[in-house]
Amino acid sequence: MKKKEQRFSGILLASDWDGTLSVGGEVSEKNRRAIREFQDGGGFFTVISGRTPSFLSERFEGFAPNTYTVGLNGARIEDLRTGEVLYDGLCDEGMLPPLLAAMKETDGIEHVIFYRTDGNHILTPEDAEKQILSLNPTSVYKTVFITKTAEDAQKLLCRAGTAPHDGYEIVRSFPTGVELLAEQNGKGAALLRLKKALGARAALAVGDFENDISLLRAADIGYAVGDAVPALLDVASRVTCPAKDGAIAAIVEDIKKRGI
Image (cartoon, rainbow, N blue to C red):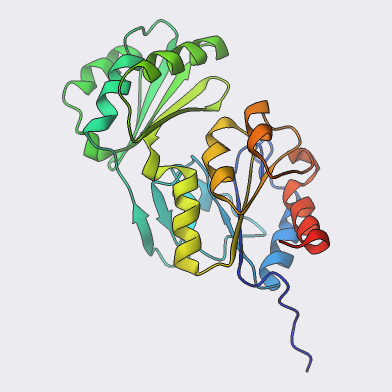
């Protein structure tokens, strides 16, 4: 019997979830078929997302990562098939200066979300200010600020960026969302950890927004979807089709045509 061709052997392909693999919460059948083809050809496919692993696990229908899934940007790397945890990264005291700076003017903030070891805490800015007084940074995976407008998000980015934040990433994940997390727990760091753990010969990644910049920079080939924000298009190695047209399917075809 002829052995099945393993044209994708040793290749890790990592996709962002919202606005990349998933559009409006839906994964197209075109993308599902491409993922299965890639995996059947020996490739490792995964999702690297700011969402929690539990959120993602409930949405893998007709496909699933055949390796670790990466949630909370890169703070949690877990094999959802077995429960094995490759990495669990938390913040430290370095989180506090940019956090406090971001909270100086709360008028433009709708909610503050602390992703913690004991669950997600969605707070008003006023309640968040009170909780900060007793907050243990080592219990926090990341903090997300939901602002009232995109302009408010930009202002918050500037405020937080004026404080000392060595080792911390302050970045937008959607127009009115700003994330604060340790750089070592970011998407790019997670891709490199996963590549090393798997012994992959090449790591490819695709995304659509500013919090995917570190992901594409860490990749051997970084793809931006065609409708990605300009900042991501600027750092991409290659630009594929808009997410709604089946970006993962287009990337698998691109690998087949151009190689790595």
